[in-house]
Image 1 (cartoon, each protein chain N blue to C red):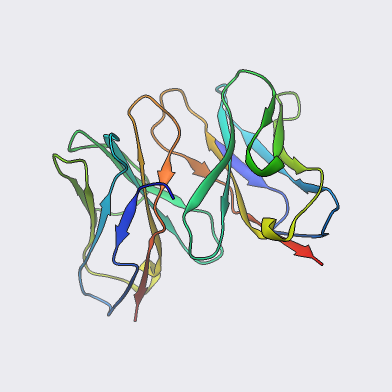
Image 2 (image 1 turned 180 degrees about the vertical axis):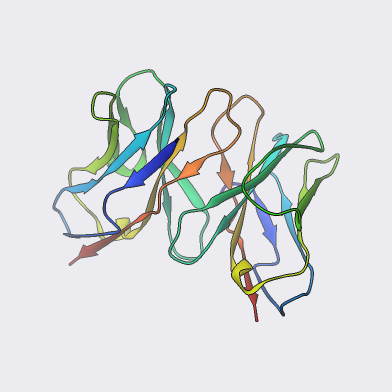
Amino acid sequence: ETGVTQSPTHLIKTRGQQVTLRCSSQSGHNTVSWYQQALGQGPQFIFQYYREEENGRGNFPPRFSGLQFPNYSSELNVNALELDDSALYLCASSLAGYEKLFFGSGTQLSVL
Amino acid sequence: AQSVTQLDSHVSVSEGTPVLLRCNYSSSYSPSLFWYVQHPNKGLQLLLKYTSAATLVKGINGFEAEFKKSETSFHLTKPSAHMSDAAEYFCVGSLTSGTYKYIFGTGTRLKVLA
């Protein structure tokens, strides 16, 4: 186990709704990254947070947004859900300056 | 463009036989490369990483990988497959200097036959 926990594990939403996914990073880690893994694909980088600021973003629209809190936990928010947002969302924590990422087990989001 | 390509989407081997999972990368920078394994309903687990030290990297569970710059490859091998090795394997690159993001390959599903 990596010490990175994500909640909820599964979620079902309808198109147009909003969703919030949560991640608690491994103790001592100050950087959190979020990835989207569509069925049969490799994870795609959404964004990274360091010290509560967005520190880089992948090719995702602005309706994907995030937060990092002083305790380094993080949220991923997705507005105006679309069917293609159905995927496994993975959170990974790390220590700034170190490349090794520790992944949580993910949140499986289904959009109907 | 920076990219990671896994050449096989599915690989089947018999238990006790060697495993070879192939990965090529494209990067104008000296990359850091990783192999992760994903078991069903579990998070991604790091098997090994290459960060410009030794080109032959040993990882957990008997896996190793060799970085070959001339071939832009980073293939994953194991001398003898075990049933518990059945999983999805991802080759991952940190391909740009100072980058904050990983680039994942599309994955190789390893099946181990009894």
